[in-house]
Image (cartoon, rainbow, N blue to C red):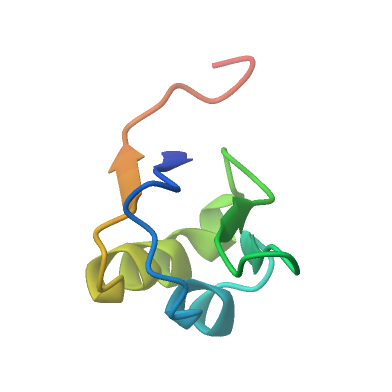
Length: 70
């Protein structure tokens, strides 16, 4: 899984941070999403999918990505 975020679409709700705190954070300056891991471990995929689904701004995109070494 490859994760990307579009800060221009982010509305600073923080739902992603609450759902997947190992993958997302928020900027202290403006509250916009910060991506901590663009290729999270498989154990986090469910949380990341949920975060993308509930993002009110649609700022999180997921794609199938080849894992390093695959």
